[in-house]
Image (tube, rainbow, N blue to C red; front, side):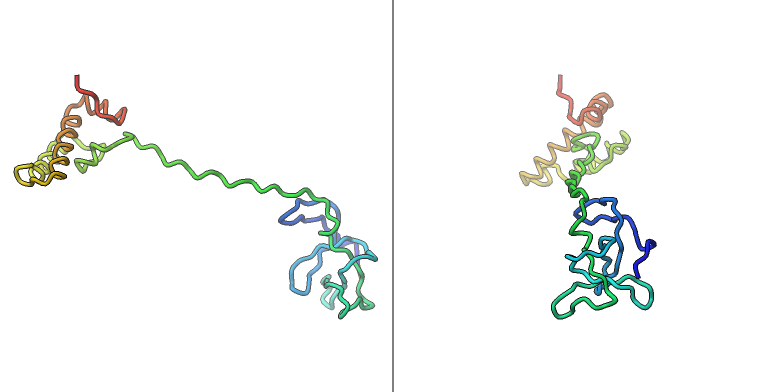
Length: 176
């Protein structure tokens, strides 16, 4: 019934690593694989037999279904496995958001531009926004604040030296 060809190395479980000992792999009635120790054991609670297709099968021995003559009483390997408990590694920390260059980039956003904008693009964007947001046209306090902000952005980005300093640091250079 049982042969040496049935012996495999302990595969381990979710909770334990492999102990390296030989086991017999069977199929439980549910179809799940079950490893049992290789030799019959008088205290075992698992019945093992070979079905008509040659597959090792196993089931739990209960008072309703005692051991029958073709079955061998065996011990489930999980009860005797000496594998080392697996240590759950903590998940890696979430990735840090990438740093943007320039860190603030606020002046380009105010004018609706990218960092690659030319001097003509900066001038056109400033003039377009100045016509829309000039305090003589729109006296709302938020609009006036926005107009002042685009004026400062144009002041920094229109000068090549100040723009280079801003691109390098992300902060508008202080006036001298």
